[in-house]
Image (cartoon, rainbow, N blue to C red; front, side, top):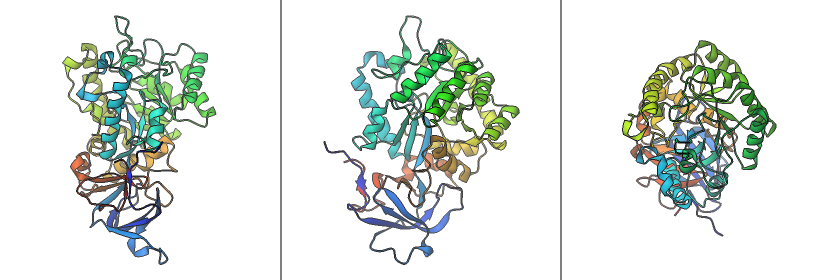
Length: 440
């Protein structure tokens, strides 16, 4: 069976030199004002100051970007492609076949890729089949990493059993044969992590605090108990060192997750000075999901309890994240797209990392490229524009260091290249036929 594929930047085997560009490489180094980047198939063959191009470069096809800025493809470390965002109600799944829900996911994957995200970590909802289909170019989308599901105790953040007995999580985000989400003991936790490993999970998602949207708990409550979190981290380490992401909003849940050694705290709204220092010491990441906290809450689309929790905790989040960044906690970009955030708006998070969290524009870019790749364990593949890495590129007509918020407007994402293939080329900036396409 042939694969649907991105359009390559060049003909098979052809090397393409992008030049006349401003290079921001995702490492945090200053931009290179007159740079060049060589694409050799799926990977970057060379990148840097155009004045230092190797003399023996050999035959290449040249493409002048006319002074536009080239960035790494961006990475969203916290998305939910199975959820509809504000465009729909998750419980609509009650009336839909799994096949129809799958087709809606495909549209969300394409939209996200075309708006600048070339790698995404889905932290509940997609199984490994979506990852495989994207990798084989049967469907367009970001390079996928999946947790498959989220684990919590009964009456925890993964328990959406409604009063009438309907499992809201199952009808909203899961697909047939997904491993179950509720965990009852330490031994059960070990078994669930092993189930997820067998299901192809790239990371483990835990709920160590209550949540805003879950019906049976509150963010300030402890979720999974410390001994269960420790068991999950131990199992994940034994299986190749899988990253463990902890949904943690209130302090008890954050503390339990940090001390157990998780890789990242997702949200982290109630972080305090002591916990920030602990995270810095351990090198743990914070994924603040600020975009979620800026959305207008609609009482008509949620329960009174979820509305009240959201109003309170979103305010706390915006007050807290700047203190976490100032304390030196490592930040990775994540948006929680699929809940209140619509798909394809991911890069609006960059402006919030600067305006709310207080990061410099360059630090925000690194949080969404090099550091996000390190958190996800794919920094040997992507995240920076360096020789040997995947040719995951974003071309923009704005200077992100002076107007980073503009990257959140798709009109300024002129082109997206993933593994040397064009996902989108608004306005033909890459030239017809110069690079192969991702999909027809």
